[in-house]
Image (cartoon, rainbow, N blue to C red):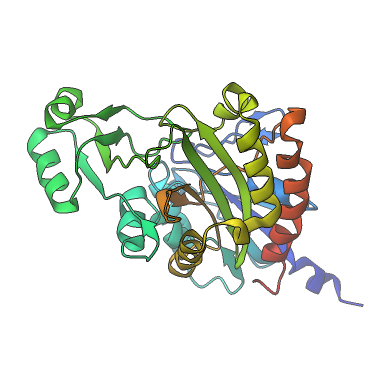
Length: 333
């Protein structure tokens, strides 16, 4: 029988934190509110069995530091480098020399911003990666960044750290861009690629990687270019054909993708330094994939409660749990 000390050293710590926090964690029900984090921890079969490792934005002023001598694995849930660079940098320094496992190391998350990922994944066969420019809101800086990145119009303007389909605007040209800029803000501008290829509907797929294990999360269709979760309830009930297409894809998983897109998803896995992350993409008519984003800041929940989409709820959660448990397990991938 293992000794109590050996048992203690198998504990898992969840790394929470937010640049906007100053040492306090606010609760809403049972959920901890942390901007720029993920709910992926809820997939654990034993979600309550963890130790909290909390690093607030003012961690450099914290006198009493957490002890790690009884921790075997740290699961980093601080996933957005745009919203939480201070926390991620502090966590990276604090965890240097930690002898256990760190899942999604802070340094790897810091390198997962939209513009850096677009450069990292460029050139993958079977994958279209729209260029992304980052710039402060001044016209001359915007122009220089756009030329350097190779962004073309139409283009999607975003604020860093925004998700859930939040965009400033889809812009047709430089004049519209200049009218939108605020010198006090930083922006991301992404070339817009129409994935319809002559078809009437837009589509968006999400694939998760848990270590080396893939899981298809959804395949949405919409009559709007900014395809997002609410389109399932708003638009898809009137699309029985696409409901069956999604049902079939989720049952088959990665193997249900066309070969060019399937190979591209595996190539993304090989290049990304993260242990778990999601990929949002569209399927082009020729079987290639159009990348929207790839990062760890993708929530797995909520799952649909609509009986039309029962195949996206309990079966997907049941398939994901053992994959995530295996990732957390002491033997890693």
